[in-house]
Image 1 (cartoon, rainbow, N blue to C red):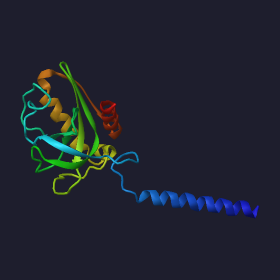
Image 2: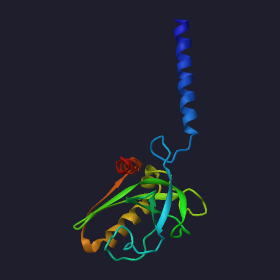
Image 3: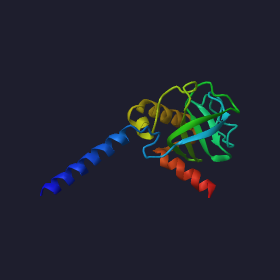
Image 4: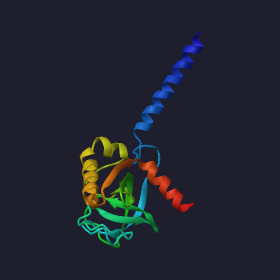
Length: 174
């Protein structure tokens, strides 16, 4: 009986050690993975969407820079940051996607944040963080897209977490 108690104590100590060691790890994702990519800016903040991906909707002032990862134009990234110039490259981490369905077209944008403090305007670390601690940013982006594509009659706006970005990039690469 004495050896069972000692074994239980060792198991309990191991579990406590495991839980405390995992809490110290910083993660940019809702799951344990690295969500950083080098993105190339195609349209700087405030630029018009028309030059990108042949889109025909005219509205000014995109709330962030439009960037691409490698040559994957099927999934444009909206980088929320400052001092982002066209043809520049910077390391960003993605926090999810927003899908806009209109009468005319289905659009998907991955949402990314610059890693460098020189370009960051907010500190969103994950989709969960965006949804809980930065919900006003999420609502602002949603309202922006609804207004921007209002002439095409927005049918739905849907948000997805980081896994959606990974799945979409994997589909393109396969």
